[in-house]
Each structure stands twice: as C-alpha cells, then as structure tokens.
Length: 171
Image (tube, rainbow, N blue to C red; front, side, top):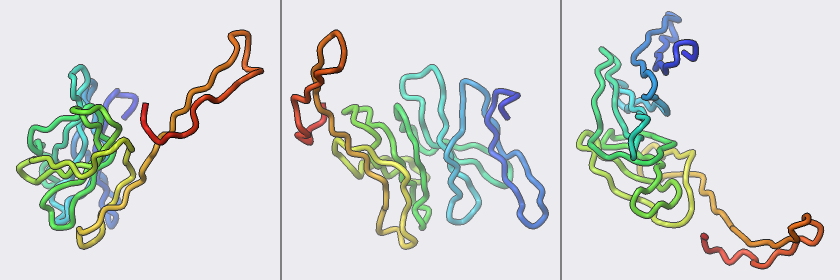
C-alpha cells in the first residue's frame, strides 16, 4: 500500500476471489518474504525495524486471526530469503552474519523456540533458497565475488592495468 506508506500481507482465496489484509506494517517497520507454514495455519515473514542495529527478525502471523508471534529473539543486519522446513520444525533463512560481517549465510531458525544454527560459513553469499520435499537438501544460489586491483593514470583510464588476478580470497 504505497500510498499509505505501509506494507500489507494480503491473503487471497482463489475460489471466492476474496482477499483479506492479514497484517500491516507502517514505517519504520516492513514485512517481506512471506512463507506459508506446512500446515497452512501460519505465515512466516521477515520483519524489518528501522532505526536499530540488527533490524531483521522472523515473526509468524496466524492466518485465522492475524496474531503476530516472534520466532525467538535472533536478529540480523539483513535477511533476504525465508522458507519453512517441510516438517514445520524450523525455517531456513539467508541472513547477514553479525559476528563476522560476511555476506548472507544460510541459517536454520528453530520453530517455535527460535534457536539459530549456522549452516554455511564461508566468504560467499547465499540467496534464492528452497528446501527439498523431504527436508534433507537445500538448494541456493551462491554468489562468489572475485575482487581484483587495477591501476590507472589519474588523467584517465587509457593505460588501465590489472595488478591482481583472481586469488579467490575476499578483500
């Protein structure tokens, strides 16, 4: 609802065509990445809260009445993807690691306790994730950055010269 400066989580009944606002968030809050729980009674979302150091956390919203419930107390600098495990025991998220400041890593967030377990631990970034139907495998896009240094004359890029060549190390 851009004209109201707020996000709305809307559910649509495909048979009747009726839609219902399940939840709204007004600035400095935002709701993103809705994920239906396996039993279809809740929708997990990433909730962003502006003005705090670690603004991204996971909440669930009950479909029957819109009640919001936090999933633990874990908060991240950023979170971009969220999906349920098929048995409903938790969620997988791609989130910015606050302890090492590496790009988005994969995390398991237990449900309902919110206990977090790190799945990946490397210099890559992860996103666009999905979980297999039996919950045994995660597929995700891995982004690997390969920085190199170049030098050029201050007068312009005519004599551009690469001085490092893909060592594979970050930084």
